[in-house]
Image (tube, rainbow, N blue to C red):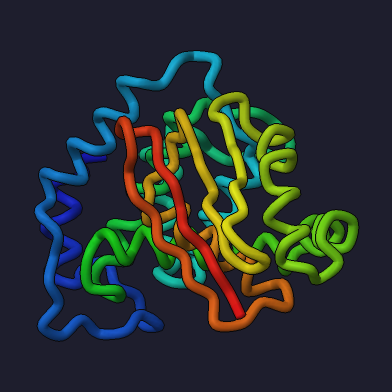
Length: 226
């Protein structure tokens, strides 16, 4: 799929479904920046870097809810997959193409690519946590306790991803840093995921802010709640 051509169609609203919020006076991020970001992530990916299909399915469900079935079809076309099976492993490259293509369809709704990535991550994580598997994970690992949930995340990721290192540093009872190295998911998307996970617990007044550290795939996320 020609993403640059599709970006032009997005700006005209051609891909917006009837449920999408009309875009009025929105500001678009420079398209080349996000194209280059995706291209760099794809270049850094190795054949063994993979992720469970359940995460792509979560993204596709979020895209369907926010932008409609046509957007989902374009995401699948971009990924090179006809479908994703929850517990099969797929190349991170296919997953990234779902992320970036899906976010492009959400730009008219959320105003720019960064916020589209953030909201796509948030919605997909929230939908997963509302599923039977997500509810089971919350019951077994967190039991409604946000601190237990954050502590359990590195182990949960290790069971689902073949790349990256995850570490939690606590700075206080309700604040800390989540540190990621060699993580392919865009920083705004991961902000949205962390916020959604905390929202499913008993946390209130949640704050999550990420920043890139030593390289494109490395970052840390400061989080806190009341």
